[in-house]
Length: 379
Image (tube, rainbow, N blue to C red; front, side, top):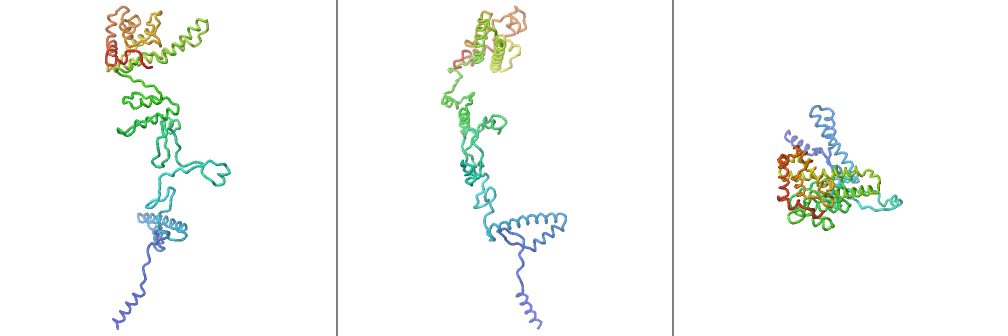
């Protein structure tokens, strides 16, 4: 009897056994806790302390976010539990089968009247992509829109703090092509473009294409006179002519003498700096201060009219390095004073100026002589 009752009792237990309540369920494609585990988690978050309480509160916060997302999806999907991609965000849908992008593409634009825009033809006034600013260089890698850049345009627009750029890359990767493109943009904007030290040359054909000037320095090509007065010499000649004309008519010279002194001083300073730089390259050492004074005095003698005791050179007919060497070798009262020797002590003057004359002679007769000791062949 006991055994029979036991078997009956066993069968009755199997018949009445139910499935355990699941801990999670899915709503709107989002897995959330059922009521029991959720209430238990809330109780733990409120009662537990220490690290257990902290962990319970973090789990509860994550669960609250999942439940809010589940409610939103359930509403968006009209109550249906659709297991699909993520809800699209501001940049599209992420994940497999999605279309997420890092940049919102520029939308097409139309120009219409106020009535048409107010009627809903196109509600946006501007696109989302950056405007084309500077020389067009190509397409943007992410948006595909036209991309423009040049240092001067970006500087004027306030995007960079100085109108400079540094182009760096391996051989054959298009550095020269990029610079030529930037130069074309600058020329199109009316800016003067200079290519200095183009030894390949990369930019001579471009300069010829824009009917620019190409000066080719070097043996057998062209000569460059470092003593040429250039534009400042032309200005001095015009000032001299105006002074002579006003003097002949008995008119007031005004500020012309001051202007002549200013331009003359600027020209002399530039010439001395140019000579000092060339001599330092030739001798591989610095030019002394008194040597710069000797150079300045010698240049003054060269450009002084003959009737005033000078050599009579001017902006239209400038001296060359050989003329400068001859003046330094000859010496005069001013040059002896600059060398800090006696008024008639030419032997001491020759000793003091020997190093300067040697360097200048080496510049004239050395490798650079064929290039620098002569009149400029192309201004």
